[in-house]
Image (cartoon, rainbow, N blue to C red):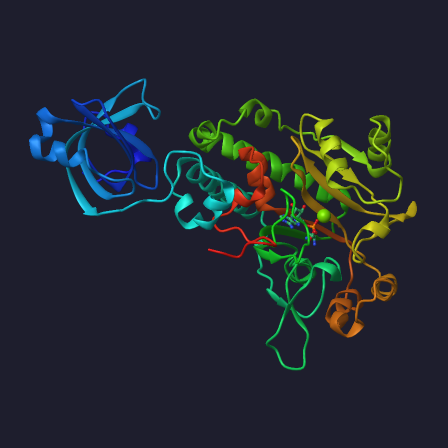
Length: 430
Ligand code: 4AD
Ligand code: MG
């Protein structure tokens, strides 16, 4: 019977056929131990001369790494085995060979590995990370779908900036029109929310970010919910619910992967509501008390975020930043108009901001003024101004970066491992 390694527990005592590749191999002379992977997991397959015969036994001793093989064997429980089961091999077939596989069990430098990312993703760690990523994305979709949000996609080619003009990617194709790759679907999500109430969009976004940090990619995936008739408080509640749902889903479904990653899951178990919510003013105070030279009025930098996130055992929501450090579309705080009704959620353990959101400007006049203040071309935003001309209401939403969340949950040093093929300032291959 054909079986997948991830389901192997269901096949205890049965004869199964696994379609996979040879991950690794060692030998004790009398027995060969094959580590076989099939995309769903890894299992140790035991080859003994008595069972497979002389010729097969000799062949097994020459199998090279990443040879494609089909293995027939009996499933046996073994408490010492990583997945709890081993395979006693009855027979195997070689589907195709693999010569001089470049990624060997020894240590390799990260550039060497990134150059071979198309192969690196076969390794046990990368395999585990990509499966966690899948779970995160599934949890996100379920979260919004279960709450009645409508998935409404937003375009990738856009004629206007959303998150500031310094990180725009120009596209040289369309005649007589300046076009960029989208930085965020938000502006369109606002239009979708006025049509559908509660919506989300989920897709790749692009930032021509001149940052070479462990948190920055030039192409990453963002999920963006947007709600009509909603405020900053609604956004903070929704963001908290989403993060809790995602983390608990991964804890529930991806224990094995977190174990491969040697993740301290107690840090993830601590991600329970309510998250601390502090104002920017309070954040500044914490930083200053900790001796960080930070002046009220500036944006929080990477180090500031790290210090703040280490101050709490779970994600922290920081709200009401000075409007000047934030994009043009945020609603001012009616009590202190120099502040924006916005929130950033910082993950613990140093990953920094995973969510950025706000209540949006509802007033036509203020929005028009902001576009001018930010030197944004009004023509490109006429359609967006229409949303304030025709039945404008308070509305709010946020964006969550998937790679940052995966990086945090997996405990990665760098977000580049949180996506199959990372795109960064100095890397667009393979
Ligand atoms: O804070 P950002 O820039 O917010 C927006 O784009 C809003 N328009 C979203 C909205 O309100 N609909 O980005 C949102 C999130 C960040 O919190 C972070 O998780 C991620 O996107 N992010 C990045 N991830 C990887 N590499 C980068 N260069 C990122 N820039 C932002
Ligand atoms: Mg942000």
